[in-house]
Image (cartoon, rainbow, N blue to C red; front, side, top):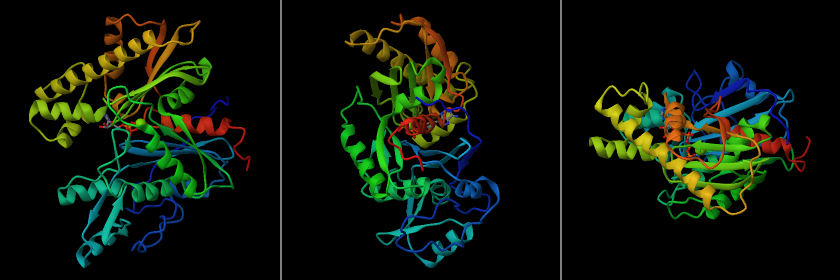
Length: 386
Ligand SMILES: Nc1ncnc2c1ncn2[C@@H]1O[C@H](COP(=O)(O)OP(=O)(O)OP(=O)(O)O)[C@@H](O)[C@H]1O
Ligand SMILES: [Mg+2]
């Protein structure tokens, strides 16, 4: 398995560049041309990203909250792009068209509505005091969102751009089978497989938890536990030499914390998200709101560790780990200050079935999954050389 020698030099959030324009790859076949002038050619990392000489093989993290891609240039620098997995539709009229043009926001027209995707959708949601629409729910394509598929195609096409050569491989993250709710990942996986193949890629699904192992545990021979703590779910992989004999997902993630905090305090979930993300330290709540966040985070962590323990004990053909292993957390929900300390506190309270040497958060918690997917793409002998 190829090791990812260099950490990334460039991380791009291309929802909006400083001029307010999307400088990503050309928008996918919009129903109407975007009314903004062409994005500036140079200046900043975005221009660079489109110009660098890329090696074939891409990693894609398809998340409920965020979509991320990772590619390598010829010098093995990793380039990451990110955007929110969200959109908003607005009435088409002269006023809204002018407003979007002034804001430098690109749109496409779908079913007679103006659609804005990615980060700018959040700004507009604030302006209109509305919620954004979300193509995914609980880690999978949303059954409640009729426009989910064309929107995902647009978002992913912008993130990945064209294949750099015929038959280029994209490894894309998929959730493991959830243990606590009824959801079939086969549909989700095949939808994205088809979508990526329409874009000209050879697509390969890879479990999200295993991606964390691939990006974080190279020095341990890709052996250990990777946990991706997302918005819609937690994805766990117990890995032995880059395979994950035990993997599962739970429906409890950041959104679960938000929903419960909102219910406990009688506030909107979006307000709870805001309070959670600005919380100072999980271990030292300073208000009733922060206390609620702490309570549900602890419950979430306890639940996750207990599930791993139970699954491990019940599982047949579990690998024998000759040496103590690391547990690595990644994903947005692991970002809160005090997260790892609380994990360690809760870990001490249970009899974990295997010796653990280190519990830590990934260095690049938000981009770990797409980097891991890229490690897999780079190591695939079938991926064309150029
Ligand atoms: N600083 C922060 N503190 C706490 N939570 C945060 C912070 N930043 C982001 N989050 C939370 O992280 C979650 C999104 O994480 P991430 O981007 O890893 O999810 P995702 O990969 O899109 O979702 P999933 O893997 O479940 O499909 C959201 O619930 C968000 O509120
Ligand atoms: Mg995720």
